[in-house]
Image (spheres, rainbow, N blue to C red):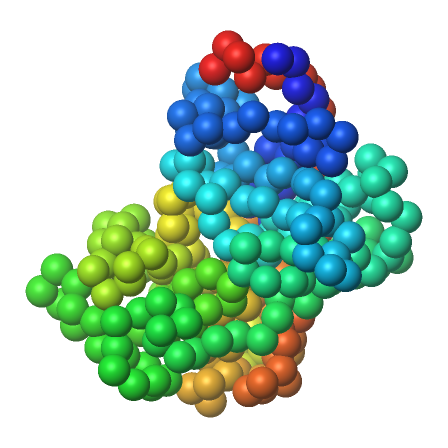
Length: 279
């Protein structure tokens, strides 16, 4: 079955995007893993599928599959690419697009300069909503990881995040400690592990070990989670530039009970066709 695809990236976080509006895209976990493989497939951090909505008021349904084959709730960089994709493919001419995700509704705004601003929704802190095994909500939790106590902020941006402040992201144990936090028993659905360096109150550096994908060049929901965590601890202002390995994102959060806004680039790299039956 020959299926067209578009390869895109948002600040280096890369995606394969399929148009599932006109035809069904028959993906299985095994096919997803093969597609995402950078040697035997196309290569990506996540696969995005555009579908017709089932929720009232939504323009599209947005499905996200990690490189390990699992479907997840949210992806901020992918949301920006999603907006550019549906506009570029003529699926909509709207500048404001309502999108249904597993993590809830999100709202995408295509700006005149081509960047996309995303209303990522209101962060959730109750442990049961993350989900996270804790009796009560706290701004910072102690987590035992390989015999070491790590201080983390835990929240949901539609998907689960554990953020810690580090003195230097370049020397942070992202690829050794990150997998242990990702699969820690306190996170029944696993978690994205963020490592944040505070540059000043309006600038941070960030690396993220993403659930089901490993360390990526950028993580949009992770950038939002880091800014929220920093704001809750009194370390950051309401508007913050987040510098990731693949580029920079702008995140704004007015505070408790308010949605998080994120903006940044969305770039088409190339297009092609692949035979899903041969994977």
